[in-house]
Image (cartoon, rainbow, N blue to C red):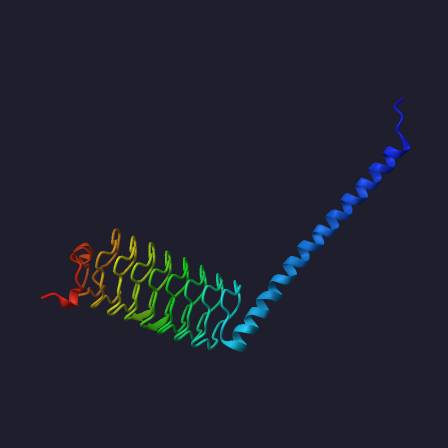
Length: 234
């Protein structure tokens, strides 16, 4: 029969108790971490509403729908999955902000600076804008359907797989933009500039108004390779 030293048994019990205590403390720390996250978001939201600025703030998933954020400074803020539907962002600064899968449907973004913003999968349906700056923004798979985006700057932007059907893009600029597989069916492209853009897989049809004001389908490759604004051609 194998004998166990009494000290060894006490050592095992102590180790077991210590292990359980460590696990309970760890679970408590995880709970506190999860509990603090919404509080931090609420604090950042309150700061934004009080000061109209929240630079580099964590506002992921926060509800800002319908709010007046005119001129707000949200540079480099994390607004991924945030609800900004119907919000007023006229003249707001969202330079290099993270807006992946955010909801901006029906928002008013005229004159907003979204240069360099990460907006993959963002919902921009029926958004209203004039002269918004989306220069170098990542708009892959973004949904702009039925939006009004006259005079918008999308130079160097990534729009792969984006939906711009029935979008008004009068005099918008797409110089050097990646427009691979973009849907322009039913869009108004009158006077839009596609110089040197990647237009492989772009979809237009008879409901598209081409840059020269003629009905589609538009010859996107010719527009891209010409290096000239169609409205300036003679």
